[in-house]
Length: 103
Image (cartoon, rainbow, N blue to C red; front, side, top):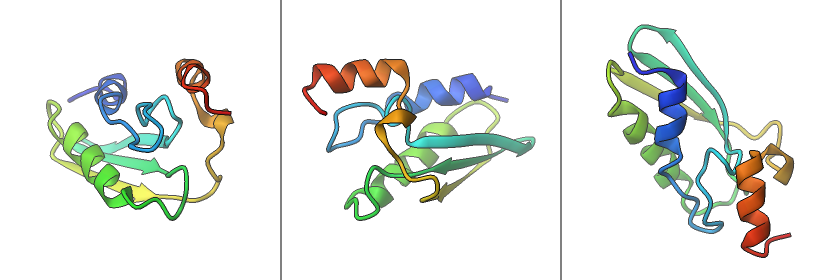
């Protein structure tokens, strides 16, 4: 079974189309759990509840984790609490955010 670290790395291949930073470093992934063998639950948010590509991002998360060894199902839940803010980003995400000129 894929590890949570491997899952995180696979999510680093998915980029937010409005802010060109991967969704993990952007801080959109709140939780990754393996409640039982083969099953993965992901809680994530979006930078904005009105994001027009929210469905696409959740599909990409299912696809990226679903391709990993031993994963039979991926449940992605969009959550709005706590709301996303820049403090949710990883150190790498904050560096990229600043280099891109976002404030």
